[in-house]
Image (cartoon, rainbow, N blue to C red; front, side, top):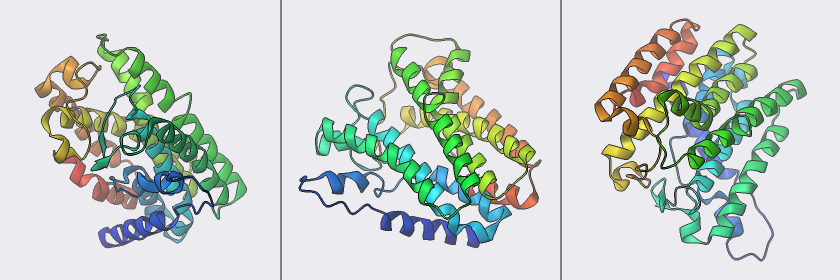
Length: 288
């Protein structure tokens, strides 16, 4: 399973690079900038979650899952481009390279983010899956990545900057801002793999807890790593509601450990192959 998954991930990476749009235009940088942050690397965590579920349950559908996996990655990338803008986090480094508004200009960065957001749904529409499956994937991605999920989380996160919120409100922010798109990745994988409704619901719940784990992990990284080590601007959450700011570093680490143990227990309730595939993917993230 390990070899099969890593081979699939490697093939997806090549596929992603090859999907850079070819756009006839006299704009000096638009075409290059559009795929620049997509192609700059990153963990590819969300598409890998989706592909892991499909590979474990319906391996013959893995290649057909590349387009929806790409949709997840480019929608996530749009959110990072906008998150880094001066009006939000004002960050100058992402995935080890200068952010788009720093390299080009703010207007260009906004429009590239807008374009990637829309293009994600075009990718699902063009996938070689049945219409009912594509419709369900659009529903999941738009719900969790849009006004009921990630955008809501970003709005709350930005509005309540420099104000101290109770922990329950912080959890609400990060369930929306981070966790729902991760949960969507697992649920979308379940839909493509034709898992039953109960399994898809279970995958979504696991994804919410996994998203919270990753947010706490990210808060810890922001506090403990340099920008060079993290590949993005760090020490940037001083005015934000973060788990480290509310709980302290050691308590945040304990909270992450508690979530990690809960996740490992929840994975045991999935099919053996699904459990194995997700453990392979998550292993390196559970050590930090």
